[in-house]
Image (cartoon, rainbow, N blue to C red; front, top):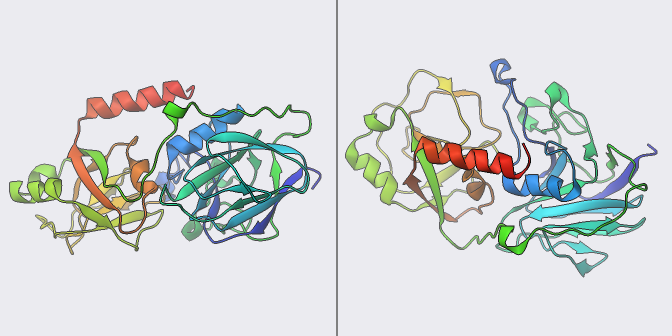
Length: 314
């Protein structure tokens, strides 16, 4: 295509087209999906003056490279994946002008998050089944290959011509840059669910006082936690809708935090729901990292949600 601007030269199975999510489709059994780190995703688009829902590439755990086929402007935010331009180290959280032949390389996590976001001026042109660019493998939706990740040889187009735009380097103010440290304990606030009172006081305190470790059996669907067993009042309930950040307790007593590609309904008891502005902390975590939980209230969750939407322009 005449508008092909980037070509994938190295890929793992975790580089995906993503936008803010496939909304209003859950009644059909489709997950909402969306970015694991919403804050970094929104900044990637904001830096380029894009619509906030413009398609980006979420790059998890690195090992991903692209070569410029045309002059273009991109932005990189999120985790430190030791990104390089023509073998020269780049700063994160800023825009970058690429010339024909330039090679952009994402290496591997440097204990500062696990997922980076690559945006292009105007957004990436990609399939948008059910009005979303989100790639969900188990639903065979998104990407160039029915839910498949980007692969070597894929040619990426932008929604607008690149040559007509002036290449201006813009970066995020230092005090607004999100810092990640995969060696620190994450603290996530949550709103108690309607089933919270059905757990005994002893089990509630056990959950609040404990530091869990993130299991290696975690993915975009859910993060499994490892720690002292939480005893539930029931091994199952009538299936109900699942919110982003829901904290389920399955029969083995090990909590599962439901993430972006979660199922639409579930029948495990739930302790609560992680705040939408905190869930990205888990989304950037590494297996083995510690996480603990604090009770919050709906007012706090609402105010922080409104502040974020207003800040990014919605």
